[in-house]
Length: 97
Image (tube, rainbow, N blue to C red; front, side, top):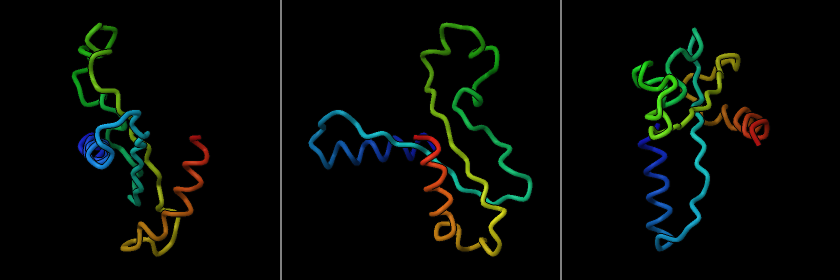
């Protein structure tokens, strides 16, 4: 997900002459798994636990967080994730802001 955020920010800079401030890029992952999302939802979860627990190094590592949105409760969603996700994502984003 970090790669997508960096790409979005790079595109913004390229299109706007490297002007600041950068826009907020909120990584949201719609999914429709049977078990729910069980993978990492933050960058710190990908590093060694001892490295990020109470060390000065932790604050120097990327702190990207991923918002997941479980769409499995919407029937017939497979193959139409983006179409079906729009109302759910609007509700989710409204809850974040």
